[in-house]
Length: 432
Image (tube, rainbow, N blue to C red; front, side, top):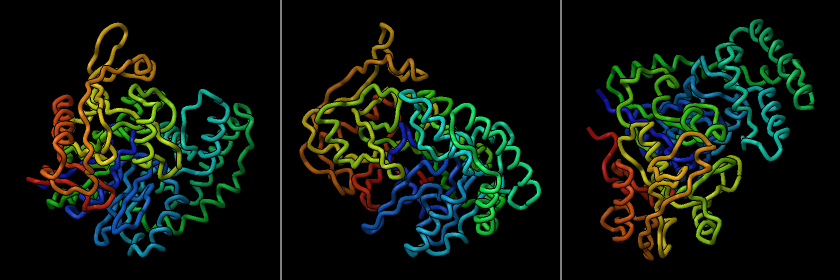
């Protein structure tokens, strides 16, 4: 049986998953996105050319590769078509022919976006920090069994009836809870009619195709979005995303049995970042933090929001390793640490009068955590673009080795730059 790989973010997202999925994609026959929405930006750099993907799996630049959007993803048809048009304009071949959307995907419609923005606006300084793209309300509709799913686009009468009911419900919330403008049924139907004809040909029985590929022994790559510490169940709740972004979600999110998930590759930044609100124990407010942000270009690829930066948090990563069953880690942005004289690693916290070595659950508990640091010497040499482990400065090797020791998981890949080939392979995830 082929070894299928699940790629997940192991921190608060923005770890560089897109590059690694693109790099691994040449080894497989399909890449599957299994959760999240178009609030996730995955940046690829190939031949100096930058491509930012939001919904489309990061294997799309490999022109003979099929890409799948599983039912765990909430799909904005308008955002998806805009992304397809960007790729077409950039010369990527046969995007719509290679992209398959599960019929069970919930759709994000204008009333989801309106409610998302109205809620955040009414919360003032207590806002969660959503991207305002309707992700949360779309997942709410899914759980409440009122979602408009991709398959509904085939039945005009049924979808019209469901839209009327949803518009009535949303307008109660918009007008009476948040003092916002109501939405019109006619506008929603006009939006749907505007994208329906392009979306329908891409709707496909993703679950069956993936299972058949597995039966044939073909390799598959499952691509997560966001990061484990933003998981709706295991993240710093309520400052989390609206889906399960841990490795186990790949099975229901893609529609495959759990035994098809063989190797979990956890993507880990060489320091720690977080975007939006929520507790962040190792956050830096000094020149070192500002330097990490500048050298790492720490701004959201979709939102443009500045990311908060801090020291590497091994105790938080331990939680992620436990939740995901990480087989191997990929350390990204090692080069951003170049030139720092002394480097700190958070090995645990002072929490409620005692020392703990793993991130506690929930935002209130994490907010009480005071990091306990171990200090190591940094390195002055440049690691940018290095492609073999032996070329790394000794202190960089020591730093990586210490991360392995504290966290209890091996490093399989090290990324030293944004390009595909600026990568050190220690142990290939697809190796038998």
